[in-house]
Length: 380
Image (cartoon, rainbow, N blue to C red; front, top):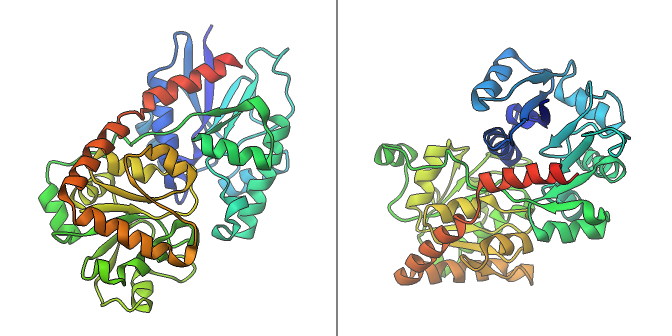
């Protein structure tokens, strides 16, 4: 008899997949590859164009089946938020986020009936301004349903586990299982061609993120206006624009010359690898994170990293990066500038940080994450 683990893979084909989309793809692919004997993996997705179903099948070879809901993502989100529309049958269900059908079930008497959800961060509570009011309401409603019906909750770091405990006490149901660098983030065979197309300067600072306040990109741009970083260009990879803001506009407001700060927009994995590899320093100024995957990505390519002292980022970095205290927000940009300058002025420090970062990145593995997810379901 075969035991099936159903994984909600919807985020892979969401309009903006984001970090959770990447997490879902990488983890599910490894869950399939490392499935124990007698177990297989199937997927669950909202009603989508046929091309999206084909894309999932291409990205996740070996997935035995794909349940296609009759409801589109928005409708399915609302249905699950209010306790409607169950999946057919029963068995093991793994959600790579809070997008999950959460209902009363009997895990003891219904063999294999179990539901696990993933909470990546507590931003809806710590930084609600980063999300729309509707989104904040949805997250909080789904956490309440998770408290009532989820058999286990996966979080990416012990820092998030501690923060979550102060919001909702899930007790021993919480399991810490982190992510890793994408298997696609590798230097391509044509790095020079891509660097030229991207317009990469000879020496530059790179960051990744949106202009949401908690991401700290605005503080980094303020740091660039200080004498310590005079003339050094900043490139920002990530979705452009946030509530009418853009990096070039923020740079002008900070008094920086045109072209000093430039948005690269969303980058494909090969382009991102080239941009990370050639950066003099990668800066991750985020004020609130659940994991901080860009830090590990930069580590994997041997790029020195300056980051905030957010607890989750500190946990992931484990001393391989240069941490900047967030206390006294009005002078945070000054400390960022000083830390970046320290790396730029000391080639030996930058080289040592590059080696330490690569060592740290090797401790994260999708294979290990998948094994721990399988073990979690076995324990349940």
